[in-house]
Image (spheres, rainbow, N blue to C red):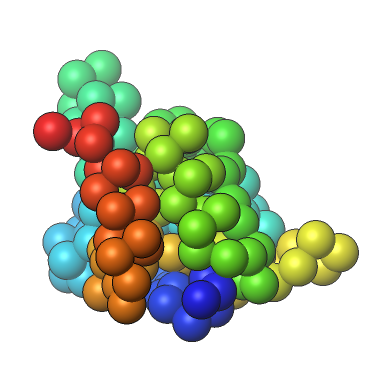
Length: 140
């Protein structure tokens, strides 16, 4: 199975100049804890609910401050044609639960997000299920 079979297609993203408050409100309204951050439609980072707690609240930032000031700058990604087993290994190695999905290695257009939950919802083999469990181990 490939990433394109399970990913969330083209989710919303925030402009790098959006406020931290806008990020938090968007997460609350959508029920997600992760939002890609873009500069002119190019993904330049991500912001999580954890980033808001640890990089904004804990450091005394204002809700009107720029979300770019708390964004995780390293964008971890995969391609929509990648095999899920390879992506799971990547997630385990990087100790992350989500990856940005790009269309291919030439265009690198943002087309979605893939999460451990997306993959788990489509587990059809015992091997794939075991890989999800192994990728989640560091969260226990």
